[in-house]
Amino acid sequence: MAKLLLAKENITVTDFKTIKNLLSQHGIKIEKWEASKPLADDASQETILEAYAHELKPFMDKNGYAVADVINVHPLTPNLTGLREKFMKEHTHSEDEIRFFVDGVGKFWFHLDNEEILCVTCERGDFMSVPKNFRHWFDLAPEYFVKAIRIFSNMEGWVPNYTESGIDNEYNKAHTP
Image (cartoon, rainbow, N blue to C red; front, side, top):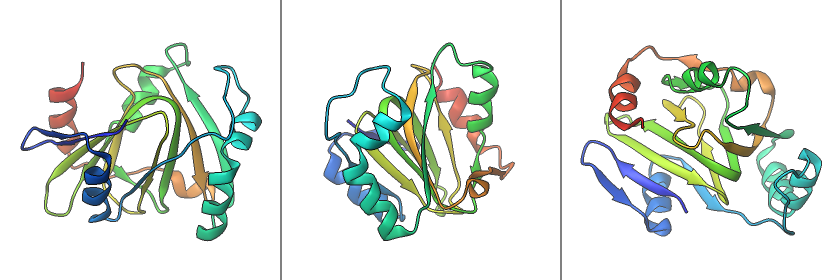
């Protein structure tokens, strides 16, 4: 179940409807998706995409997305530390960043135009769409395990454009286990 942290106020929100409403005010979309069938821990990319096709295909068709794949990051992933550090720097993308959490946990940090900082902890079943050019960063901690469907118009749009604001350092230090 998703959780929202209003970082400056140190307030945590757990009611999904409230989280959805707060995020939608900033153009961020969060939904709940369910698989059409049970999935084994070692399910293949094809099996995972098939299990969510009833959610995935209509979303992709409606919004013009062309490609979906599955990423599986876990404690044995090569260069896990470097991968985590790459995600933990504030950045934007030239297209929407869309993730559906098949399993695991991850934290999306958002730097709003009013300088407010939000952190959304996503877990199994959480669908998140971050608008293009939105300042954010992502953390794999504390579990270092995320299995997610990624959705793209094109893969090049997902290249991070780092802001170099440094704001991520302040929050990463305060909220990293």
